[in-house]
Structure formats: C-alpha cells, structure tokens
Image (cartoon, rainbow, N blue to C red; front, side, top):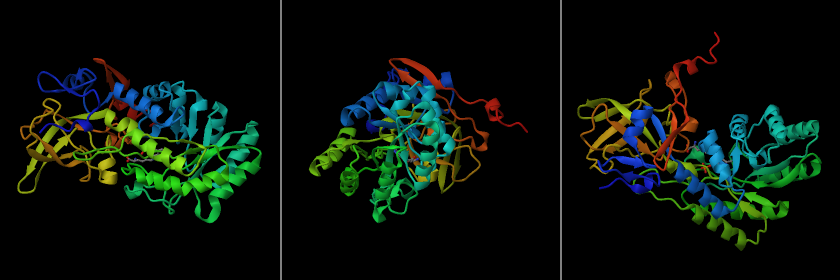
Length: 422
Ligand code: LLP
C-alpha cells in the first residue's frame, strides 16, 4: 500500500532510493542540512493554492494568516492577489513587515485594543471587522482622534452550527464572536455604524467554523445571512474561512472551487447582489507542509503498546492535544514501505498527553535515529507553536525547483533569554 498522496504536498515524489522528495529536494538531505524538528513547505503548492483561491473567489479574497504566518508567506499570498486577514497587532506587524499593501489587510479580532485600532488606522489598514458594541465605541473614538473614516465590516453570528469540533465552531448562538442576528444586535450594529459619521460600512462578515467538510454548512449559513445582508444594504459579504482538509487516510475534502461555487450559487439563488468573498487559511497551507522529526527512543510496554518518542511534540503541533486531531506518519527514507507496525508517537514534553499520533502505522523496522514525518502540518502548527519546556521552535524551510531556503530560523537558547531581564 502506498502512502496516500492526497495527504502530501503537490510536488511530492519518490526518489530513486525510495525516499520522499519535496520541491525537488530529498527530505533526508534537508533534515541533515537543517536539523530536526523541521517544517518543510512546498512553496509551489502554496503559490498554486493561493492562485486557485483567487480564481475561485475573485481578487481580494483574503488569506487567514493565523493558519501560518511569516513574511515569506504574507508576500506570497499578496503576490497571488490575495488580501490578508490578521487578528492581532502582532499578525499585523508581521504582515506590514512583509511590505504588503496595508489597504489589502482585513483586521479581525473579538477584543481589539485601542492601541491595535490606532495601529490599524496609522498604517491605513483597508478593513476593520468590528465584533462588539464596545469595539464600535472604541473605534469611533480612535477614528475621530485620527481624523479618519475607516472602512468597517460587521461580524455577525448567523446562529448556524457547522459540523466540526466544538472549539472550532464559531457560528452558533453561544459564541464570543460576532453580533448575533437573533435579537437584533447585528442590525443595531449596522445602524450604529451608519449613524456614526466616523466609520463607513463596507460589508458584513460571518465565519461559521473551521475544518468544515460539508459545503452545505456554508450554504445554510449563507441562506441564514442573506435576508440580513439585503436589509443592511452592505455591498460585500465575507463568508469567512473554514474549508476542511484531509488529515488522515480515507478523508477527502471539497475543493476550493466546489466551496466557492456552492456559496456563489446560493447567492445567485437568493438574488444577493453584494460581492461574496471568503477568507480561507487552512485549505491553502495545511497540505503544503510536513514536519520532520528524529526518533530518539522506542519503548515497548509489553502487552500494551510501543511508544516512539520524537524530538518535538505538543510545542510544534498542539492540535492532537487540543482537539484530539488525527495525523498519519511515514518514514521519509521509504515513503511507500509497508506500514506494518503500530506506534504511539509522542513528543519530549513532560506530559503524558504529549501525543502527536495516537496509533501511527509505520514500518516495523523503524529504529532510533530514523526520521519520521507527519504530513498536513502546514496550518495551525507553526502558528500555534510554543516554547513549553523551553523547547526551541523549529525552523521553516521552503522548497521549490530543487532549491531550499530557510524562511524562519530555528530558535536558539539565547532567544529563550531575550526578554528574561531578571
Ligand atoms: N476567518 C476568521 C474570522 C477565522 O476566525 C478563521 C479561523 C479563519 C478565517 C480561517 O479559518 P480556516 O480556513 O483556517 O479554517 N486552531 C484551530 C483552528 C482555529 C480557526 C480559528 N479561526 C485548528 O488548529 O484547527
């Protein structure tokens, strides 16, 4: 059985020795050059996904940078014609440092501070998505102080449940995000902005959840929103992000085109004339990357299981711990070798819960010193990484056309003390 190709970056190929080649570079060589753990991104895959997204949704569709952000990624998305969604001053700072046109930035967040709003206005951020009456008031004050009239989108909560993990579901009524449509808060937010004189209503925004496999969830959300959209007179609707990706064998997800077409048809059917756009993150970057680890110990607990410990863990991929997310694993030295053993892949953190793959199928000749890789780690891995146990964050390497380049360096022990002034 060969390793499922839909879980690997587009450029994945098997070299003459049976090893995995990405972007024309042998993954074993990359690990030797850059060390492990290591994030390897197929740059062409990223470019193609961004372009596909622009083709499907039209120019101005936003990349949700929370999924994976560094300057190289921000540049790449902007060059493909995407806007960029940021959710904090920190994300905005990185995007601005990549020389992205601030007018193409969309600023999200359910609790933006006055300082973040000032930063947005100072740099000329294109859209601010307001999420609460407190924020509307805060932005009013900041905008008047700056003598500017920001373009504002109202994040509404349509009260539609997307089929996904509870923590990833954001469109239900019981949510910290957005203005609920039920009870009229969303309509009041629109009127408050229209009456303010200090802000201009640019559109309406909704995001119903993440890792959603069923495009019908988006259609339902759209159908719930469209009467409100029409009443509001807003000229743009962003349906947010959320398109799911396959993480494990047997899963398959809708394509960007299928997602866009489903939402677009719903818009047509309901006579909506507003520009309908979206803001995907995961579906652009998740499958573009793999994480490469080194196996440090293999411990058989007789009659129970075999633990295989790698040199990273929940600090580079907290998703299994947070959401119980599943992953596959393979040996880069022999991608298609029969995976006849079962291992619990764990990290090096001081927690029993520090699991990367609960029941990984791997060739049973795996041994200490081998490289082991997990695919589909391009989204919410590097971006949600931590320094827990003072473990250093791994580097990010882009590969393309036989060339690799480091876009984020591995942290050093000195970095751990950079702000420790005690
Ligand atoms: N727009 C808004 C307003 C969002 O809140 C999000 C994700 C997106 C767009 C992008 O969603 P995507 O296309 O990536 O699904 N850490 C979780 C995912 C949290 C998503 C938060 N918001 C995970 O690892 O699954």
